[in-house]
Every structure is written in structure tokens, then in C-alpha cells.
Length: 219
Image (cartoon, rainbow, N blue to C red; front, side, top):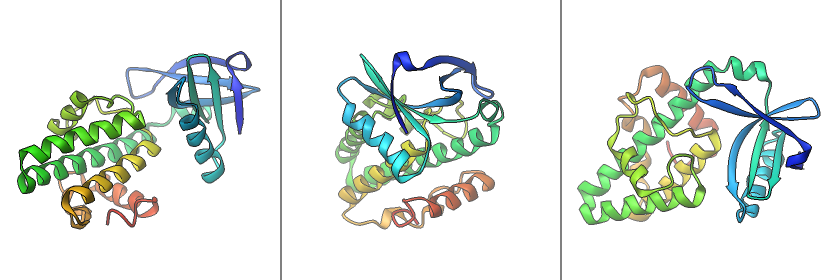
């Protein structure tokens, strides 16, 4: 939609309705945008690729903000929508929880079937994917180890991922699983891997999965 400079916009924050954090908000010509993703100064191509994916392929109204030390992508939103997005928050949490559970189950399978050495390599491969893709709050081996040990159904501090983070994470997880196991049997039936989830959250995840680009990978 727009490629803008810092002097073109006004940026402030509002309180998230369900989290103890401030949400960055960008204002441009009477329109409101919420932060989607941040890139370093040397990641111009990655930032523009995400911006084009969201605007050209998904039809979303987005801003690409160029600053001296970073690039950032912002999606159009209504302020009242942010103040009343409890259901969106709960839905995104279900997707994040499911993604972490799938990561944990595949890691356990790697360890049990292929051994501790391969499991350690799998950890490093996942950490490298997260570092390259700049997943919020999961850009180191230590953070991957944390995800592998927590119960995502009980902790309150989950990664602050958006839908596009989840899609690419599950794509990369499937790719690595295929590399380690030599087939895709690990990916189905996916519902068997997620039996610990509340029924409503599991149903939502499966429905979302079937309508996403992942439907032919995880089923």
C-alpha cells in the first residue's frame, strides 16, 4: 500500500486489552496501523517481501516504514478493534499453543527414534530457522530449548507471533521433519498429536489449518 519515511507518520502506543504490554500504533493520513514485524537495516529485501506478500497476495492494507536503523511492516486496523480483540487474542493463542505442541512431539520422536545426537541437531536446526526468520522472542537456541520444555497450555508467556509467523514456522517444521524422518508420516493425523488441547481450541486449529496454505502438509 505505502512505503513511508519516519517523518511521514506519527507513532504512539496504547494498552493491550489482555496483555501487560503497550501496542505500537502508527497513524498516517487519518488511518491507523498496528505493528506486524520489524527487520534490521540490512534486511530491506526481507521486509519488502513480507510487505508485498501481505499487500499483493493477501490483499491487506499495509505500510512499510523505512527508518535509518530498521524496516517495519504495519497492518491497517481500527483502534476500537484493538480495544475489543479478546477473541482474536484467544484464537491466536490457540494457534501458537498448537504449533509448540507439534514442535515438542516431533522433537520427542526424533529423540526416541533417531537418538540424542540427532535431537540436538534438530534443536539447532529449529533455532537457526527461528533466527533467520526473526521470529519474535525465539531467536536463540536457549529460547528453542525453553519451548521444548514448557507446557504451552499452562504458561502465560508465549511467543508474540502473528498468523504469518505461525504459517512459516509450521512450513519449516514440516520441512525439517521430512529431512530427519525421510517421509511425512509424522505429519498426520495431526489431531492425534494435539489431544491435550481443549476441544474448542483444537477444533479451531484444525479448521484454521484446513483453510491455510498448510492444509496439504499437516492433515
